[in-house]
Length: 171
Figure (cartoon, rainbow, N blue to C red):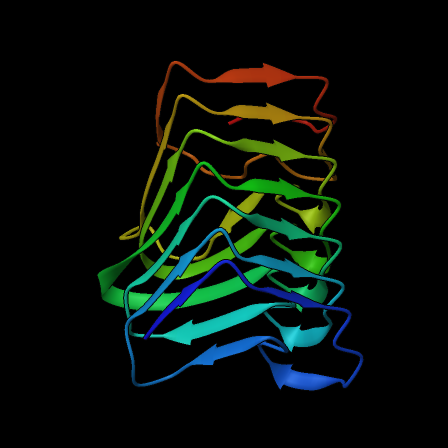
């Protein structure tokens, strides 16, 4: 499934998984799409169990969930790619202000992650030690968490700026 240049904003229905996109059974490519103002128990905007998801450009803003304020992702052999996406003001009451990563790979290339909050992992919470996270050429700023700002221990981080994150640890 490929979606280009759309906005899905303020979906008010409470969903248990991914209020804007529930990707169970398909690979999804989103280009210049804005997902904003969504709420679900898992993955405020996007929920995926076992499929490749690629977001290029666009924005994930003002979404909320218990786990994965913007995205809840679980896959042992697939990748969630966020390339040049503006990601801000997402909230998780528990883990992962932006992304809850159960398993699989998270690849962040460019873009800005800003003002996301969670009890654990203001930006990203990784559940499994087998998960892989790479952050390249991005800005990570103004996150708040009672645990680590990224809560990604052992992440690969290249040419990335961390600024004004509030937590007990940065990585």
